[in-house]
Length: 255
Image (cartoon, rainbow, N blue to C red; front, side):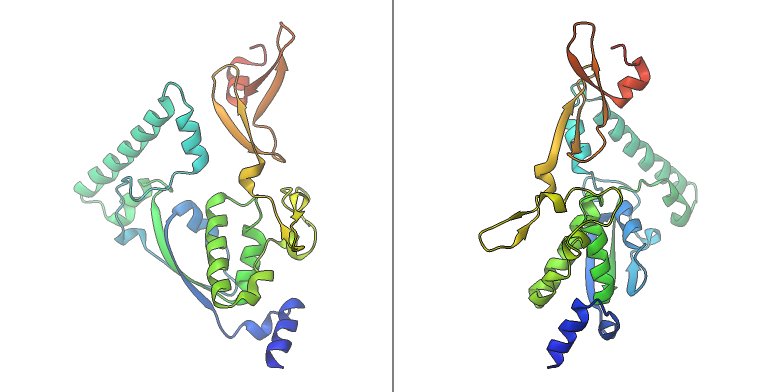
């Protein structure tokens, strides 16, 4: 009876009966970009993040997070200039931090010049109400890939212990049977029904569209509901060409 009452409360979105306990997680090797998004969830959440004062501020291959889209753009950069610029930026950051430390600057102040891509970690605890809200917002495909990955991992760990939470730790469109955002991500509209009658949302990877700039050959990716990252123009030969926004700004539409 108690379990039945508790499940009824959760389904009715009454969070107060669950506020007496929290799920605790250890999150490692995420970027500072991701951690800044995580700490915005504060109600029903307890956070103890690694201090940058006591962490290495020198960037290496083992303590930096590079988004997959950036890796794809670097891979498709024929001249390799972008990869060289990123390497130069990291080298310059390391040089500045090292020189500041050698000059007597504290780690507290020299870390100002370390990139946000550097890794961090934290212990973080959520009440069921708070984790449910995190999943509602951060499992949406418009959320950034890294925090979406963290939210999915947290939900999976909870469901391993208690599968009954599976129906609640989902994007809000699945829970509310539709999107409440003025500009939705299209996730709910892409659901299909499998033989068991379960809703199976399309993976974000299945919705990526690739564009190649006709002027600089840069390859860009966007979701099918995103604003196209450039413009399509008709050339003097009557053929349509895709021009990335950078080329459109630099050389205009008369490419």
